[in-house]
Length: 191
Image (cartoon, rainbow, N blue to C red; front, side):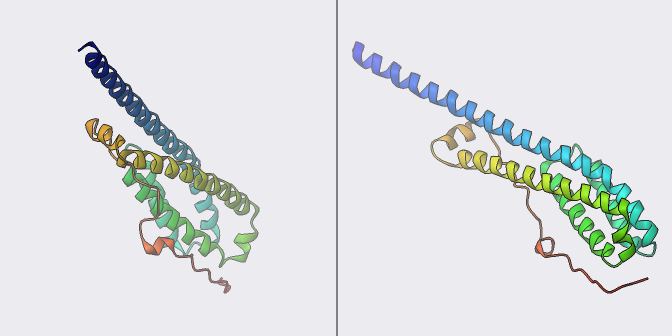
């Protein structure tokens, strides 16, 4: 009788310890995902601050390309205004901004004088550095999302995930096939 009670106590203790460890593991992974997304936010803020200067520089050379310039500003403003939005909304806004920036740089290819402007080149270089940092931050975020979501779905930790209602995180990825295509660049000279 005493041995049976001791075995039951040991089994319950092991289960409780496992539940605590699994819960703490989820909390640790969730915090890593949130920290990774916060890192992306820092780079996005740098990008948002740089875009108006870039657009103003291009405006002087390509005044008749108003639609592309206003698309970039509109996408930037929408992304900035959504600071308290859901992760999904932020990702969608960032994808829209990335597409608008791609069109802006494709437009700049049509203006050799603009491409030689030192201010434009410096802004373009700064933006390229930020984009590289953003790409790395997105990879880190997605890796943490993968780890969290996998742990949330595999047995037996899926039991703890459902008990404590841990929701899956979304990956930072392109929304549409059009965004995955390369930007078309036309090297013909326009004036």
